[in-house]
Length: 388
Image (tube, rainbow, N blue to C red):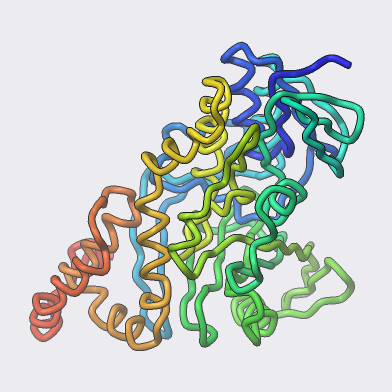
């Protein structure tokens, strides 16, 4: 039985990026994935921050974001953006998958159900061997459970929504906060020919489905006529297809101290838990993390991934996990949106949204608060809102 250098398990953005990087570094690479191409349960927004290395070709881009808005009650804060992109996850994932194959990775069309350590190699499904394993098969996939155990439910976001077959009138990405007590939000994402709407809340939060249904019916009044079909008040009937998934969302920063690599193995992307705990975005960390994991493997020591990922994005993860509970508190939300239109607070929000901010957001918010209160007292609004 031939022995490959590395077996990458999972062909999403993390796995395909890892397989491509490994192959380009001259490693004999196997890429295990049994379900390509596929439509992924995901909003498909490529974040402003780090987008320059996300490798999204024109054919995978559905639209360019014109703005990102945050709504709480009757208050809406809309930030113009220039770099954000919306992709079809099936098209983008398949593009990354093909790039891995073009680099020399060999696709193995199998679901991995068995891993055994045999000397210095791994026996995979009893039929393939590799010196190293990169696990990229998602949150609580086989490799996550095999190497470090499942992520507890209390550290997961539940995400679910609809593909609504109406062409958006504006490329505005919306986050709606405070619809439910608890930590999370509703979203409305524009695509080329449909809306992607959904919720992202701590798993087990009561009322998530009801809040989503209310958003759907309030924004686009109508009724379901059959599974996947929705009739508007105008009489037009469109697709409205349900999707769902789970996303890592650590409530304790100490969970990021736990290693996600070991003797001959490394986890990346959702399998590593490398998702921002506040909003559940992880595509940038998946793509970069896959490349960093392949680099560590190519150097003969998968555990060096711990050094690499911490150098690139650990600060963001720890800060998000530490501040998640404070940000979603009702008092903080009411205060933040009450002062959100002021130059002091909106300026901070705009920098963060555009990926231009590197400081400690919670600290800077409280430092700006006295100035924001004075600005609110005198009716001062940020120029981008005043001109809207």
